[in-house]
Image (cartoon, rainbow, N blue to C red):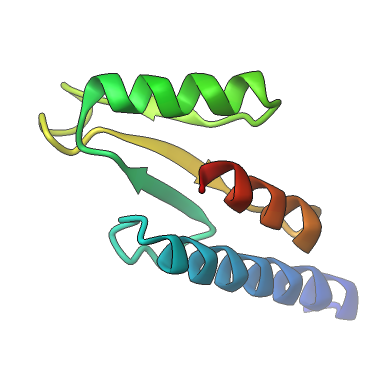
Length: 98
């Protein structure tokens, strides 16, 4: 793997760990996913819509997922971080969730 690809991969892993730790600190259920694409499990369709729509209005792109894609009571929004995000951007999203 080239040095540049290695740095990109490491930055992605670092951002995902930072985001995961922030979600844990907020008490957010993300099913302990090891992926940079993390669900925010809200467990209610209406709450899911409210959280999604507020993030959309703030300029954040997330994806709502509810029945039949997931079982009733496991509704969520999908989020992800990339190597191109900054820690500040991730922190701002975490603050918006709080």
